[in-house]
Image (cartoon, rainbow over all chains, first blue to last red; front, side):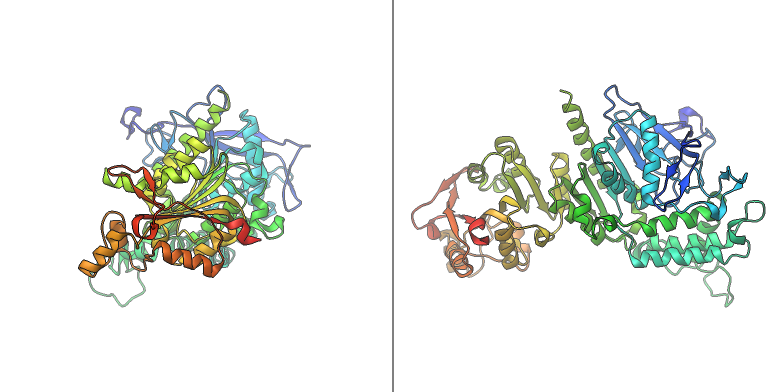
Length: 390
Length: 209
């Protein structure tokens, strides 16, 4: 057990998830697909204090399976802090002594924001697959309501890794006047065919689970086998060949000898099973379908004649783009594509390529260089923002 | 302190050359100290490219915008004459594809500053004569010795290269360093023999036309 005094001194400590509901009928959130959503709730957390001039707000955007709980602990009994606690807290990269940090759960998600497991007001039952398809732009449009609600005219930075990075880029393109800077980590302007392929295999695993029942499983058994299989596949894509080799090698679980049976024998098998089972406890299979689809659809250049440079032409933000050398899901070539397009249209952009063995997962893990570069980048951004008042 | 001096090679000449408010691309910008100097003195709009992670992090700390990668990466996407000045300061001899880089900087820059250690400098000639090996002293840099595919050249070589590719030379300010400082002293008499460093300003605008 923790009590407040046993949390590390650089932790934000006990935090609480808040909820913001908007577009009550007859108002609605217009979605890219043409459909609408009403009402919409976003779960969010905030850390640190908004300064008087409101120049220090940073929006953190989570990846596929993330939540609004980015830092700190929900109770003294919590064993694990929020998903990006290594980077958010007093004295950390997102220094909560200096910045007001916001993180919200995406729409389509299952951790407090409106998604397929929410009650559809039209039927009084969970949406299931009646939930409209949402896109990355829809997620961002919903977040804008929250930012308006919090009274923030301009965000000092929008920041995220993987799908979070996609949202960050989308923010800068959709709302250029509202975003002063973007930190886009291990991300892409569009997902590769290979990435879509892995997503589709995961979705098929869910669809083919006998418990799936067309997405109407909330009153019965959930498609746990399908979802855990989807997670196992995805987990392979988050690691690098090298990190997997180093972590597990060909080591066996319980013995030095082969059993010559189909038991879970290799350590890597056991690890994936564990990851799959853990995931089922905290994630909704329908949300997994919707969010992977949103990532697949994301293509920043689609509305701009297929040219990324056109998409970035009217962007006003400064950028920090970070890629990881062993990330094969969002390879550095895709980070460079973003950066080169920004360079060509004369935007302020830093590209930092971080040498690591950890593959795509690296953005969630402690990394001294990433911490330092983010910290220094933000420091300059805040100086710039405040100098506008001087 | 030695490295500090070497890092600042030709800075005074470059600062002098670049006009107020110019848009500048520094290829191989290191820790960004030249760009900071140019921002402070000439209020330039600067961008850097640097391969070393330490260099890039140092630039971020200084509030500069830099690309981590090879200097030839991403150049081909720039439109013609995108920059008022492209700087290739003490970098050309480390470049893997110098021909490509030079062609690109002539295309994307209205002006290009190319400065490199002059192999024709008398001390280098003497070194080769006496020891029969490439000079590896402080003006060619330790890094040069450990790098493969380096392209040493003299002022004479580069002049001929420019003639061959019709790169118009605007100015030549070949120089040596003043003793125990990073201040440059322009060498006008037989620079290919007496200048430690070559310093060319090429006219990219004229070339592109």
